[in-house]
Length: 358
Image 1 (cartoon, rainbow, N blue to C red):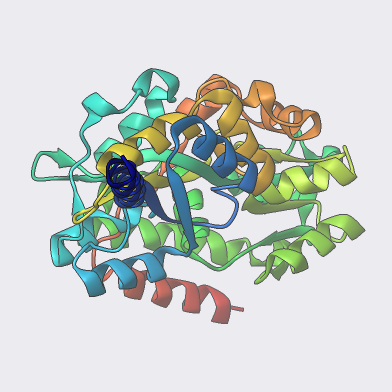
Image 2: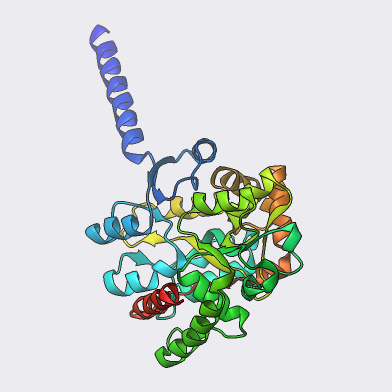
């Protein structure tokens, strides 16, 4: 009898050990490499509670994501969040991502224009490599006193705002002025001669506009200070900066230009050697639910591709966003495509000449 009891105890112990070992090896984990604010603690905790999947978050940026995934051939992470214009060239060169299976993505809860823009900019050989996640734009930040005069980028050159204007000498300014002049810089990206022709027209416009410019801002804090003090009443800048100022002073607001705000999208992309694709798609569909996506906006200050998420964003940010973007303005956003090699050099030469001009 005693021997039988000891055998039963031993068998039970072996079973518990086996179950414990099984639980350890089958525990699921999602390894996410992303930007700050895109995986808030409360969102991670809710996902883990609802799915039983542990989330390991690594904060990063475009260059670091590319470096890490390139070094491992697409291993080490299950889900990444590169910007949409940083996928195709990298994929063509290093093969670090795998195509998106859109049958596993709940696109019904995403903005259709953003899904299309992301598919278009991440397409390679008939496959798509990105799902839209978080987005933002460059446009106009204006004081109410000049809002009627400044409704597009080229209005920054209007005599009514002479000496009260600021923008950066960077690519977005070239692109924005091009669109406001009735040109299409993005359509000319793959035609070097046409693109240089557009830049020549924009260069002339920016040189003529120099007398209107208080200063070319180089840092966000510098620009915000200029707008706060009233030294600058109209500027080309990011939407999040405009909304921040609007919370401080309702007379300052972000405006989507008539020719279209310039938009960037950070995506969801699946690394080529992801070990838990199922969890990656679960995360995508989970965080793009409107109420969850709103938590990401509240944490990061940027809106998401989730339809209706603005309903759940904190009130002051929701109000500023809706004042800037109706559906028509969203559909009119000019999304950045991948930049072909060599354009940065040409743009840099144009910007240098504008800077040096008297």
